[in-house]
Amino acid sequence: MAHEHLDDVKHYLLELQDRLCAGLAKADGGAQFQEDSWEREEGGGGRSRVMTHGGVFEKGGVNFSHVYGAQLPPLATAARPELTGRSFHAVGVSWVLHPENPHVPTSHGNVRFFIAEKAGEPPVWWFGGGFDLTPFYPVMEDVVHWHQVAKAACEPFGDDVYARYKAWCDEYFYLKHRDETRGVGGLFFDDLNEGEFDDCFALQRAVGDSFLAAYLPIVERRKNDTWGERERDFQLYRRGRYVEFNLVWDRGTLFGLQSGGRTESILMSMPPLARWEYAFEPAPGSAEARLQDFLYPRDWLGEFAEDAGQRKSGELS
Image (tube, rainbow, N blue to C red; front, side, top):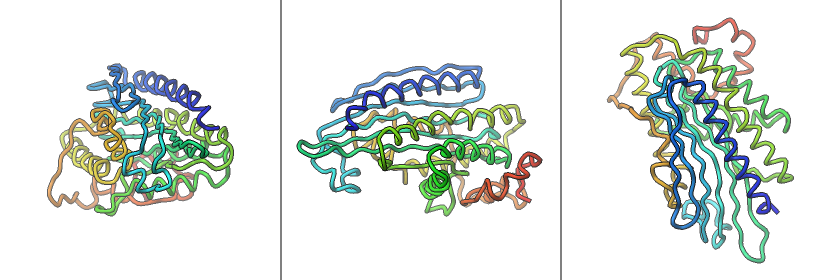
């Protein structure tokens, strides 16, 4: 049943890639995405679109991929043994934005669909996706806006959907070796196949369609904030955490590499520059130290939404 709709999902994802690139390029104002199509020897391929040295984004990428094959990579079958011996299709769009200005947050998102088939048995399928925000100099107004848009996207699908997917995002984007979240979270969901296919597909579309409304107003508010060497050094240091998560914990990176995807496209999410400093500690009370107050799960809408409009400094109290 779901396999019949694979073309519909693929069509939506290609169109979403177009809309994301158009919206982000307009917001950047200084560069366009360059497209690079690729093919996978075992089956499938994709089109990668990357922007570099723009007016806002030092590096940004929006990738579409559709890979398929006769058997799944070990990572997938280890987690789901019932998929052993099945052919598969995995189709999705992923994006990541690394702004140059340290006051503009990094952001990531993806929406994807997976189906595994075996003769004589019903197909196994699910949707997944979400988006998250990684500020370096967080402002409460921005964090609340981000989560308000995320909640609004989820509301048509149930009163508890935002809370569940927000908590899942906090849990997934957690650097266990650092004991901190990657940023201020957002939404994350996987293995979505409850109920009707059309309802699950609609939820995936709602998440993908809401990203620009969540992110671009933050870009507009922060892209002209002043910054210097101190802020740049801290941004590059915190980008190191982003790299650590993607290489150590991210399942999508591992699946892409194990399934024979295009390495350049899989690692497109990496920042163009990053740095590590041994045992770095920001000065107490500094803007850099304040970031740590944002790097654990918070009820952003319950705790801070009421007065976010009056609080521009990013302070929690």
